[in-house]
Length: 313
Image (cartoon, rainbow, N blue to C red; front, side, top):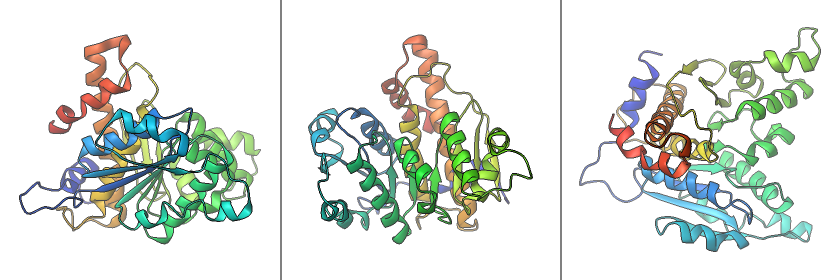
């Protein structure tokens, strides 16, 4: 890369001027939220707004909408995913209430609070394919990764797709790629290769998909470029931090594909890698700031509250 990823990430951030109109700094959609998991899509969508997106939509299960609406008036909540799908016709039409909105978005997140019910998983798959058809920047996290593990073809070759697995999700994705013959084992047993595969190996196996492997050191790779993010985060591993990162990724990726940024000299791949590194640094910094203040009692709510101050740094 001609400049460091963090330098590029800063150039992706659009300048705020009186000439901008609503939506130009990002319109993010989140597909997720079931009866059991209503906080995760809220965290992802609200983080997208606090990072700088103008609008955030949540497309959730019918029985999750009231709870998510109650968390914040800032979110546009669509409780349109049926709690169950009774027929093949229902399955094919599952995405119909969401599809008209997708072309208006600048990025899409699939997975926060998705759950593993048949209806939510079917909608996740349809949303992933629709985003690909629209060339829409896509972040897949949480139970969206469960869908991908079982259907790798849904993302192979999609260079606008970001997978953000934690340690265990990364291992399962590697195992799925090895079982599908997408990575050379060099004569070693597949179970041994799972522990040896890097983020770059997995990204290459999936045809240039971007991997954000979360950990004490985050690794971002599309198989060609790889960058480690060693920013210090929180020692408190409260639930929801991955959802915060998914929302930040969605906003930064919106900017990476916008005409407003000042990184016009960089390639799409460089801008996307920079967007991922910038998101990781932002969230790690906010988590660290929250932990310094709250220590053992730190929750994701406090992390989101630190995003504005961390952004200014």
